[in-house]
Length: 409
Image 1 (cartoon, rainbow, N blue to C red):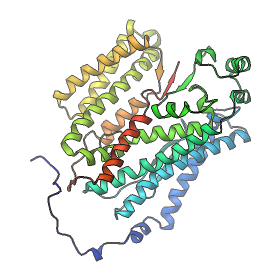
Image 2 (image 1 turned 90 degrees about the vertical axis):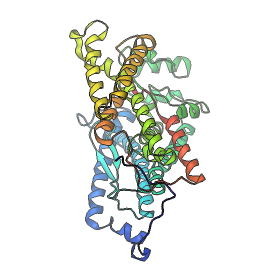
Image 3 (image 1 turned 60 degrees about the vertical axis):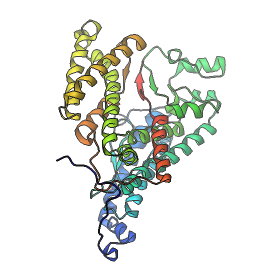
């Protein structure tokens, strides 16, 4: 028998509410000294790793942590970046935490995850220790984090835009000789990264919201220089991580929200379609990466790269769609066709390598999150305010996501 949610017309008998813990009692369970010390220790380690790695992005004379140590001024700039980014992550996770506490759901304090690579952290998570079987509670816990984090990131980004120095500020950074020369001659940044250097250039992908806000300000650096500016980079990361969490799949925040908005059956279909889009973005990243990695073993037109990715794609689809070949075969075919059209007719080559974030995200969702949201025991239609906030969250996802968040040319 298929497991389906119970509709809002179902009535439940409840126990004496006087036996339920108060909000303060629920919070106290998470605040014993040993637990607080553990979470605080992880947070401080994460501050250190983000500061050290962040100095490589925003420092005037960057060094690659852990291979080198930044200068003291660069460390302070990295510490500023860490405060902005971890401030966003903290507000996001505490949004979930306080929503769970309000509904008297067993929950942990946020776990910050340090790593001495990338941006210095894998983010932060809270652990909910019980199943949430009511769509009102599910929605509130799911939406509170992204909405709170979005506000913080938006404020950080707007402050960064409004306090930008003029283009000559680039003269403070080591390297960048081509762009420095261009700024001296023209007083503005170059439009194209090819004008900056003949080597490899890291480019941060634009988003609808970032591009719209940037249009109202002067001296906005191009996307291949933006990550040197702490407020801009931290604000962009905050908005992008908000969008990642709002991916309407499985038990991600966006999955909780969209499930609460449209119900079990519709969400199942929409989640599968979104995963098909996600895995296609993964293919656009993966095939050039595999092709470049093969070097002299690369076949004409990257044929071996396509074969390798095809095998990975089939594995992911079988896991995600539970061997439902009614979905697997159409998605497999459509994904490879769209990937080929994009790489050969829009990009025109297999040498533009992305960050592989969508490949990792696809694996994470397929093997750890799952595509379908498990049915709630009590499925109620949301009130108008929650519906408005829910569709606002979906709009934030569209405005803040970048199909190609980081790539090299």
